[in-house]
Image (tube, rainbow, N blue to C red; front, side, top):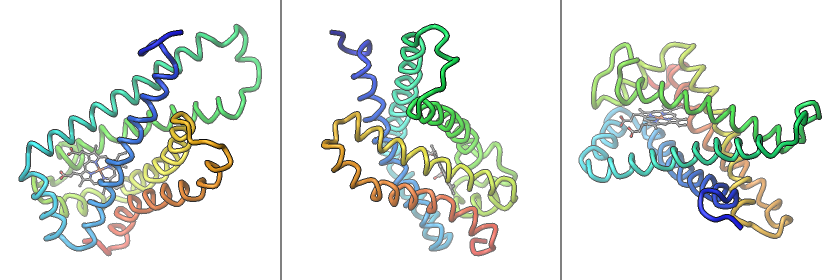
Length: 215
Ligand code: HEM
């Protein structure tokens, strides 16, 4: 029996737990984004309040970065193990649904990661923003999402994230042993509603900018 990182059970648990930590952060981020609907004073005030406790802000960022690294490292390592275990010429056989789903999760995850790099440079650092003003979060979002192609990217990412969260929540529940299967299946609508609310919460911002409700 193998323990530690060599064990696929341990790596699956690391992916599940780090995924749930990322989930928590995503929920906080979407809630923070919704303050934009209360106007610039509230949204900028919320962002300023976060910066008034730099210790907590950097601790949260460090936690987020650690969870992201563990999540990606676990997924990459599990994919390598699965590839090494596959019999030769197996690629000629049709893939089963769970193999297709996990390939979809890996491709979707890579796209989300690419977006996060772009997004941080766009709205946190501001180097990819046409008129970035530090501390003016409301104005930065409205100006940054004013272009239809950029807003479309944000909406598409929100949908992709919803699907990734839905499948991820499921996979995490299975890995962490939510039993029996029937009870887990009954919770499926709850997981779908939760993921849809997050996707719509993120998508609502670029859509509201395009519609002129946020300006
Ligand atoms: C679609 C609508 C979204 C909007 C309007 C939005 C808005 C923002 C804004 C304004 C910031 C900078 C906050 C600040 O400087 O105080 C930010 C930071 C960030 N966002 Fe988003 N975001 C969106 C979606 C996402 C998604 C889908 C993800 C992840 C998959 C994400 C991940 C991040 C990260 C990692 C940061 C950096 C946090 C930090 O400064 O430590 N965002 N977002």
